[in-house]
Amino acid sequence: MTTPTPDEARDGIRALTNHVPETMTATHSVLYLLESLRSVRGDEGDISIEKLHQVVSKFAATFSICVQTLENRIERLEGRPGINDSTWEAIMVEFGLLSG
Image (cartoon, rainbow, N blue to C red; front, side, top):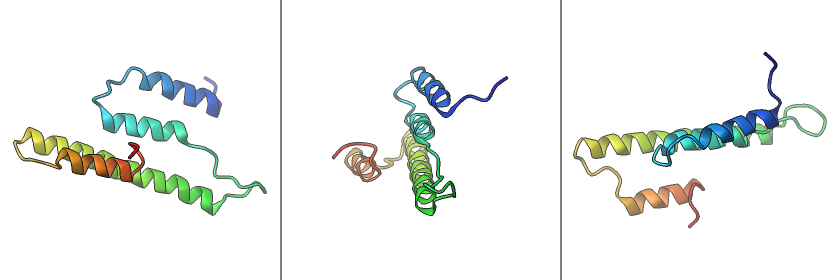
């Protein structure tokens, strides 16, 4: 088995995303993050701290949104109010997952 190129990997992730229901927002968030990954190498071939920070920041934001998504759904399934829809929308806009 050969290792896919970065473009082939992104194509595979896009294909997988097409089979995930829209209601599975945490899964979509993770797949979009994986599809957006790029090299952290700078112009000189060394690791760019700025590019690495961007990747880590995206992972942290995605992790946070996924936890909030799952916990909010659990809260609602348990009959508790969870995060109200307008607040949830504001959170998603803040993380850049919805346009404001």
